[in-house]
Length: 213
Length: 326
Image (tube, rainbow over all chains, first blue to last red; front, side, top):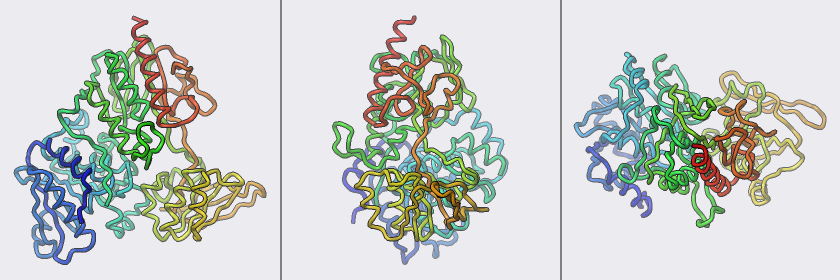
């Protein structure tokens, strides 16, 4: 069964035609694919077929555990975004970026491909001052119109700073994590296990919060 | 799997430029909903220099599931209509700041608009189209437990309450729509309604009545939300008898309508009793050169098509002001 209908396939194809540099996606799944892993796999096959500038390499979470450990993938389905030189900027999607999240997925791919506005000077300066490792986990639901903005902001920071890693985590696909982090409203961003931000905040606020983590 | 695509093609079709601090614009529009985006198209077509400062493109339209009363479309999703509005704006070389909140306005012949990040932009006229946001209850526990069981967006957060007991406050259309979404997955849904009947459209009330895991408490109001780390219970008062009771609940969805986003202009512009910016039939506010349109204004009836029409009117009024007052 096709994941995209004809209209969406054409829309995404038109958007991806504007990609600049190549982007390589790594997909972590396993041999006996769970329902959502299978669906995410089909989604990625179809999505990457819409542009010759997007690569896809599939890994097995169990057999390729070295790769999983290398990329900090501790759950599946997981998508890792690499730039044209296979550099890892720290952008992850845990779960299928469907619903509203297709927007953050495309946005992050564009930014990794080199198409992005520069960060505001003050934000860039504040980000440079962060001298510790930062892990942002953005919990979302696929029916939340505000969530892609929170994911994009976190991913943008990760892209700009080698010390920052940012994950989209679908609370529906990882209910045990939603319970662990007491997620009852999305978007919710957890920074280094200690700081919680409810709602989508602008990049400046997110950097400010990360600096305190 | 559904895909709610609302970003347009990058690059060549998008002619938008950054808003500059050292330029005096003819018009700066604050907001990004139907009123703002329509005003932007009208200003650009008139040829006045125009800026747009917005948190997002689409406003409330982006959270509307389907639209069946915007002329030209007998059925379109809110997301699709918002992206069409956006595309129509982005074909112009309009100056835009996106994702930042306007903080304050300094009036004068040149109006200064200060954003939260400290940047300041100047314009001869302003069009305020900041729309509305969810109304809060204003009871103890609400602010402390927001995001910890207190929720305002059922389409966003309903999936997180599967198998739980939840309360929905409000018996209007948005309350009943939320209650229906929640009743599908929650263990039990209790509606707290201020009035003696539900005010939602009959078609929604009928759909809601089909569920058996629901209770409606009429003429009740929420007086407190309790819980340490998360919502544990909700205190409700019977408005007729004054009796207070405690309901076990892990979540509470607040659907009691909207309030105007007027913080930017409070104390500056004249507001009506509902906090909406008073405008005349040409979208003029109490200060010359400042115009308002859409849900934040006193225009009756909050509809997409009305907001768009008002946005057009505000733009034409602002353009006329720019020409007349050299």
